[in-house]
Length: 495
Image (cartoon, rainbow, N blue to C red; front, side, top):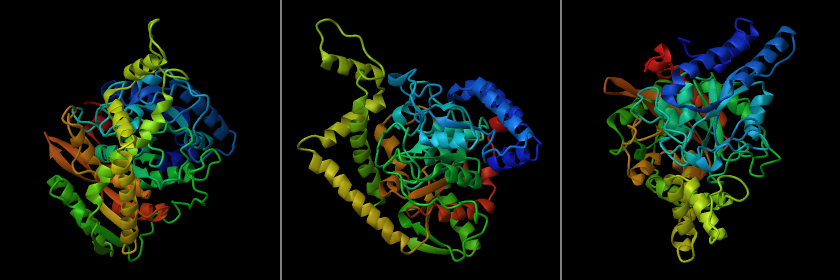
């Protein structure tokens, strides 16, 4: 597989009968067997099931039957998106070997479109992390440099797409968990507007923040997948009752007089020099296409991480209360003199990892009597102010342009202080707080130890304006070749 195979490219080759689905699936399974022992992207792979489905699709095509838009294409999904087949563990020992009684809406929509779920990808436990170092089933390695993290919490999905182990993958994004790993792995990651994609069957972390979205090779593939994933769902009352545009319809048509807002806070001394240079380069790419560059001031940017790490743990504390060792999940052994409280304490202590425990304790603290007003209530007030600041910005521009992360991928074990890890979410978490949409694109590279480390460029758009987001993203992608550059592992199969 010397060249990246996009979804749209494979759809054409299958439709023209240049490739059989079973051969495509086998090709990806062979690469997983060859490379994933080094990367650890997948927690489990459904090889037999995938090949059986591919054979069925081939027979349907031979018989002249209509097949779905994703027919025969192997797509991976994050381990916190449940399916009836396989196990859904959320990267946690607490749910090891847990079998869901139903399939999530997002996965169902892929399957109904003909996609083949090739496996579940490793993620930070319960999607809590920015490096994939907090996965109970091992650390995922970045295919660009195996000593570096792939980002988190959807690191397994991003690394799998970057290494060519699947055509695309689903991730979830609560504070940047699709976009940050996409940036670290040089792929495209889209976070839809809150409510655009059903959360039914997504293990809840922060219920007012979580969204499922695609991780793909390029912008067009992301637009196609979101069209399939998006839309109202009777199982999720927070899903928006709005029509879903055809995101591919005008994606190659540049936007006339596009107003590109560049917040002064996004080109910062806290970013690496290469990241700031990538943002400046992106500004010039848009300027060369006739876009109007608008200076924007967003002083609340620095408060986004603080607000996020109050709101998200508070919601996590509530959501994870269901994992008690009684109804499902890990149940600890207790002695004859111990009681129900002891069972809860032991089960949760043994089942949860350190990062999940940290966030549960933080969330419980900010919701507790005497601290609610000082922390949670104030964070929610800041959230309202942040949303108003975005509303004001989008009155002056169509998109906001900046970096996805302050730095490229860091080395495994480098960030031992939780605060330094959390500050890496400064440009992504604020998007979730505002409930708007955003996309991370390959935007450049930084050379480190004779290897290239990718840099992500982020485009943010107003709520439910994914159509503008994709068209603006395609304007940048069509003028650059960053997305076409592959890690050596993907080209040669060698680390």
